[in-house]
Structures are given as C-alpha cells and as structure tokens.
Length: 342
Image (cartoon, rainbow, N blue to C red; front, side, top):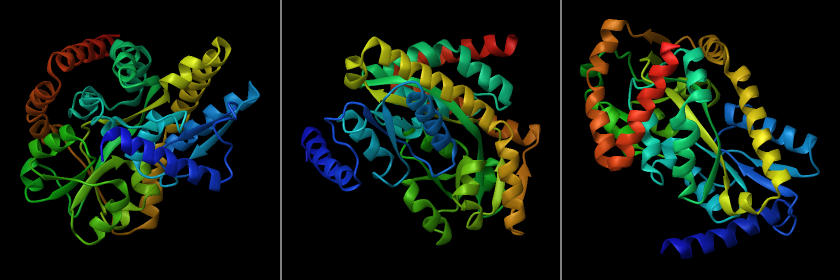
C-alpha cells in the first residue's frame, strides 16, 4: 500500500473510531484533538492537560486528549496528524527520527548535560532547538510549538552493568530509531527495535535483556518488575516535541495562533515545575514496591569508557543526515558551550 493510500485508509478508519467515541467531527472547528505517547499522569499527559487548561480558559475552544494506545502507537498518531485527523501531537524524536533524521541528534550519547538547570537553560535559549528544528519540522507539514525535556535516561537490565564489556550479548530494546541502535552498538550491546506495547512482555520472557527510559516511565510502566537493575549512565535526557498540523495552524486566525503559542509556553513552564524532583519521587516508589531492584550509578571513570565510544555515534549521525546534520550538530555544540559558559 503506497503512503497516500495508507493515509486515506487511516483517515477513514480513525474518523470512524473518533465518531464512535462521541468526539465532535471535523466540522466543529472549535473542538481540537491532541494525542500523545504516555499514560495518565505522565509528563506528556501533564503537558497536554496544561495546554488544554490554557486553551479552554482563554477561548471558547475545547480540546480532546488521547493517551497512549487510544489511537494506536506513536507512528499512528503522527500519521493521523499529518493527515489532518488530529490537530496536535506530542511525539519524541526517537520516533520522529524516521521522518526527520536530524531529530535523532538527541540520541548521541553524552552530547547533552544531565544536570537539570543546564538542560532547562539549553531548551530555553538554544538556537538549534528554537530556530533550526522549527524549519526541519515545517518541511514535513508540522508546526513545531515546543520541545521540552522529560527526564534523565536510565538503563534497566537483567543484571547490573558498569562497562561496555558487560553489555556484550545483551539485547537492548531501542525505539525504531537508527541512531539509537548505533548508540547501543557502540556501547557493546545488540540493539533490538520494538514498539512500546511489546517491551514489558519481551523483558518478561527474556526476548530482550534491557531498555532505557526516564525513571518516571520505568515506574509508571512497571518496567522495574521485569527489568529490576537500574543503571544511571548519565548519557542523556529524554526529549519530546509538541507540534500541530501545519495546514490547520496556518488557517487559524492571528488571535488563535497567539492563543496556541501562549498555551504551549504556559504548558512548558508548568512542565518544568512538574519534572523538578520527579525522578527522585519515582525512584522512591520503585524502591518501596520491589526488594529486587538494584541501583547502579556509574563513576566518572566508568562513564569515561562509554564516553570514549560516543564519537563513532556522532560520525554515524553525520553519515545519516549529511550537511544539514553536521551544521545542526555544530550549532548544538555551540549552544551548549554558551549555556555552560554562562
């Protein structure tokens, strides 16, 4: 099935599903639809509800939110947004990387700092984040409204790991993202792409031996139950992006465009407050729920062994993305230097 036919078929199926849920049809321009990739109460869900709160408090519009699985997997909700079925979508670069290869930059290990204050400052001030990515998303018919961090990436495995050598032979789940596969190859593991819905069962049956996610997601998804060894490698933060169908956004009045942008900014400020301390709270919940959990925090010397393998991932990124990726990486590093220097 070609892409246009697939999108037409998907549009028909999804519109029927939405009608069955009692959602207003496309004729109701003041009812907007927004889908994200996480569960109730998770970071993307909080962001979506803060966005909704602002929209509905400052206009006559209403917003319908769909969580993970309600309209399919991550790829499904992106296709629905591009087809105009959904007006807004929240999707991480881990999945958007197939559509926008440059978005995979967030999976170059040890490129991003892991202390929260520096990360937040970077997202506020980075030219790469706030200018370059807007153009990249626009080329795919998407209006990038906000990129924001969710939490430090934490690895879970079937046993504690402290070196690349200890990753050898382990199948590590990765998102359907070529660069993330390259990262775990560099780390010594065997990357195994899987959609989120299959991860818990694959860990439980030992089809895979580990995965990575922010700690709040490890807690809410119960991953620690089947992958109890938590490893803090300090190799990066999980980043996500909230965007709109560009045709929809361009057709809005100037007043509504401002409303949407203001709502995005409001949700960003609220989510920064929400994630402050979230990792510690989630880890406490995990430790209280299971006596099998172990926590390994790599020392600087141990981290250096992983860092030494990061340049080969950078090379892979440039090979995948060409000059545009090289320029983006240079801007990224320049932005990071400015943030850390200040």
